[in-house]
Image (tube, rainbow, N blue to C red):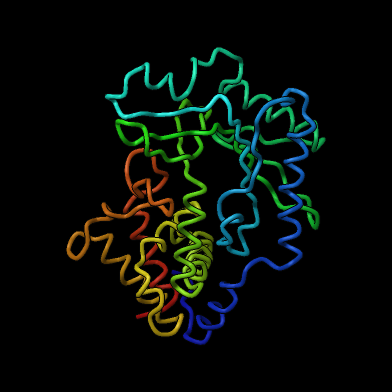
Length: 308
């Protein structure tokens, strides 16, 4: 590793890293969201449709590191609704809940095409459509950050035979055919509650780990990881560890806990860890990261922060 911090440097950077966006940065982020809303609202193909446009991810949850300036925005078509049921729920019951099978044009390909058209018309410039999930709208210095715009559908997951218990989220159909379900509202609510329980240290710690991940990736100590992964790891740190001693103590003990939880001797190799939405397992098929990635990040952070 190219660099390890002194204790003085570490303490100074902890203060710097926990700071949220400045007023100017926040204004640019809010402007980006307003512009995407305007792009969708003025696109003729979306007239009369029930669409929700909203920020999601670290910007909405106020866990973004200062270096991660992009804004994630969903364009969610609410009807037709997409849903999954327990296997034993028959077709008649499903139809009773959802209504007749949808036969209209608004499927994944159509939604993706029209979101692209709306962005291209409104922003009058090149829109990056090469990504598997999102469209990227480039930043304009001093005006707006870059935006990742995700076309998605409203999604309902029924978890019991009587269809009385339901989770509401979003489903994205990627270009490669994969189906990706997200739970942004649950992530937001759980994050707020944990942040309150820990005296705001939860979101402070998330920003710190994201900043460290950025530095380690820049040094090529680790491969770049999604910023959301850092949020996921800190979410699995118990509240009493995050509130332990000074904030420096809390970061140190959080890394110790993660190292143990991810191992097989003291922990369960991460099998009990979940995303901040509380629904989705952190590790498993379809995830962008592995237990090895988590261990490498935790150990790299320990070394870079020079905890011993």
